[in-house]
Image (cartoon, rainbow, N blue to C red):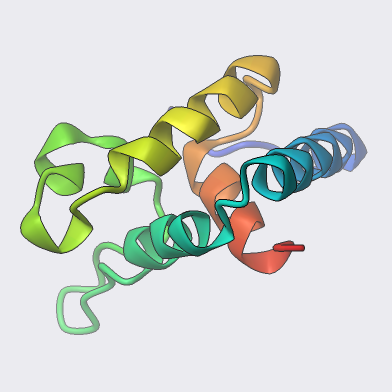
Length: 103
């Protein structure tokens, strides 16, 4: 997937997704697992190889089934509903919006 063009339209979609996530997190009382999802996606950065980081790769089975990521499938499934509603947003941005805008 090509990098998104971050313009006013993309920012508007990010804000809509943020509101949706905030509502879901509040109603499901799932802030801890959502924060954990965002952290585990970002926490893969390797300074030596300059790879990893908040790139949305946590959604790949190889990553979310890794022992350290146990239980994150629940958070990924919650995010899929938001992603379906806001398809222009990258997975990386979607997951990091969680960390920035937790209620």
